[in-house]
Image (cartoon, rainbow, N blue to C red; front, side, top):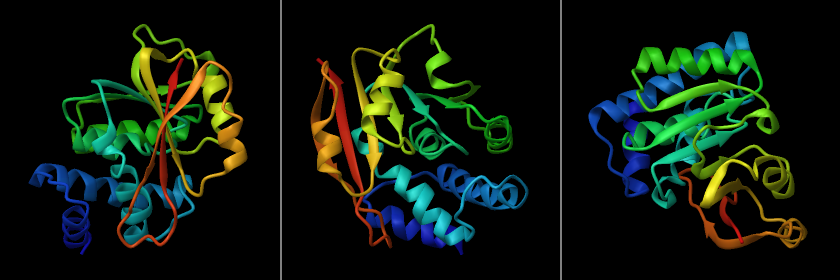
Length: 206
């Protein structure tokens, strides 16, 4: 059931995935559903909704990623990082979260689904000092753009990009982007079967 839905959604988004990638994406949803019962990783309870609201929602960002090295900040159970890592095996993803149960789940996903290009790190973002900076800093769950930029300013390379996944846009929030940063692009995203606004904001250091 999930496999057939995934195929339909990928076609709708004009994305191609190998058999292995499709298996891994469905496997991720199945593991999320299984672990969610004990670990409460997401408020979404239905696997079909997980596929739409978590996996497809994450994958809408995939065509816009530039560079080989990314960090997913406040990743929770691995969103958007794990679906993006599955679809971009040539890129590296660090998944950062401060809660141990989420990190344990990610590591189990990595082991069971044999995903080679993710590294899970348990840390608060302010305390995390990477040896090598990132081409992209991804965030799907941050309260505000201001917080994201102030807490994550040390993570990207000089030419690195912040990718903020947002629902409805808040004009006041956009006007309050701190000095030293500029909004490069606002992209309207379309998630199959989701009748809600989705946006990707690309922000750069000035």
